[in-house]
Amino acid sequence: EAQVTQNPRYLITVTGKKLTVTCSQNMNHEYMSWYRQDPGLGLRQIYYSMNVEVTDKGDVPEGYKVSRKEKRNFPLILESPSPNQTSLYFCASSSLGVAGLSYEQFFGPGTRLTVL
Amino acid sequence: EDKVVQSPLSLVVHEGDTVTLNCSYEVTNFRSLLWYKQEKKAPTFLFMLTSSGIEKKSGRLSSILDKKELFSILNITATQTGDSAVYLCALNFGNEKLTFGTGTRLTIIP
Image (cartoon, rainbow over all chains, first blue to last red; front, side, top):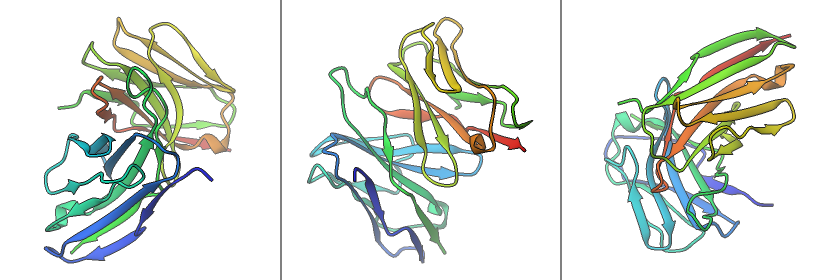
C-alpha cells in the first residue's frame, strides 16, 4: 500500500531534550516536506527536499533540522525543543513533474508533539 | 504576512445546499494552486490548478482559477454531511515551496 508513515504519532517531552520524528514513504517520491499545523495559523512549511542531499527552508525553519540521506526517509530533528514547538506535524511526499512540483502531495498521519 | 487568504473562515449550511469557498492571494507569479480537504486527520488532495479559466471537476466538487483577479473558488453542490471538513488552499510559488491559507471550516447540518 502506497503510504507516508510518521513516528511517533504522539510525543510528550520536556524542554531541551533532543528528539527526532521520522518520516518514510514507499512511493519513490523525489519531493518530501514537513509542515506544522497550529490553530488559526493553518499549515506552515518547515523544510522541504527535492531529492537526496537537497533540502531547503520553508516558512518556519527556526529550531528545526532535517536530513535527506536516502530517498525514502526525511527525518525532522528538534535539537533543543521549546514549548512554542508544541504542534501537530505532518510529513508529505510527492512526485516531481518535468516542470517541478506538478502532482498531489500525500500526507502522513501526523505527529502530535507536546513540549513541556 | 498573509499571502493566501481563505474566506469565509467558517461556514455552516444544511445538507443539499451549494457552497462556494474562496481563496485569494497577493502574488501574480506562482506555478500552481492546490485545494485540499482535511477531516480529522491528514489533508487529502482535491485539485491542482495551473491555468486561468479552466474548471476542474470531480463529482460534486469543482474549482476554477482566475489569475487576473487573483483568486480561486471551490464549489460543492448538493452537500452531504461527509463534506464537513476544513478546506485548504495552497500556492506553489515555483520553487516548490508551498504556502497554505488558514482554511475554511465547513459544517453540513443534516
